[in-house]
Length: 308
View 1 (cartoon, rainbow, N blue to C red):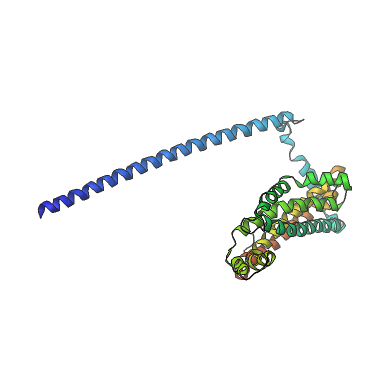
View 2 (cartoon, rainbow, N blue to C red):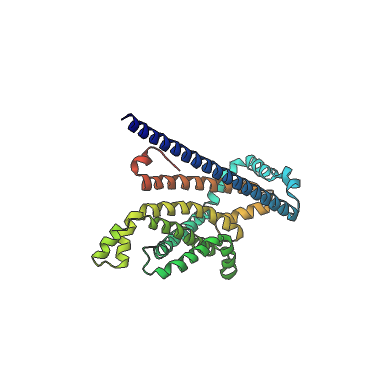
């Protein structure tokens, strides 16, 4: 009996020793792997820093005045704008009314571009989603088309359209809509991939068409995310439409460019446009944040005052 206990006890000790050795081996391998990973991360950071410094030096050498030479004067222009706006602060309310139509034009450009882009992106996202596309061969070309639309900046498209169509809000709306298609199409397709396929399979078993399966089985699941992304894109498009005004695409950006290029004597109007645009973006951002919270988290969450 005693020998049996000794045998069992000895076997147990051997197993524990082997287990301890294997655990130490695993820990040693893990630590070696972590050291190797840290070394690779350090090398990557050093390479990135070297490229950043080299790129900055190359850009500074190509710059006419030099970055370091002009750095002390970086606050001169904002100072001139603020001082002139302060001296003529009593005129700011009139400027707000004067440039309100241009602001509304900018908002209309962004709204139309967002609506058109979101509708087309919705259709293209269904064609680019694996497991939902009516033909698998459509996925790759549709995804590459979205990549191209997303890669080309709005200002490049707007410059080409202004050359073809002339200045105005139409080139800006088309340029922003094309970029919106690429951005929202990518986001919508990723949302579709997370949708449950059980409703789709159930509708397919009843003989529903592809369009019926999408509208009844997929859209109800992803509609809140669709609307949330569309509202977020609307905020971005307001900023983009204001920027495109600098290249003659209409809206309040065009007026801002004119007032800034005029120089002294128009800086108070430029300050009024800045304030008007800033207030609009803040208001739209807050309203869109409340709407997104209601869509994604429910009314109770929005009532708590959570604003993005």
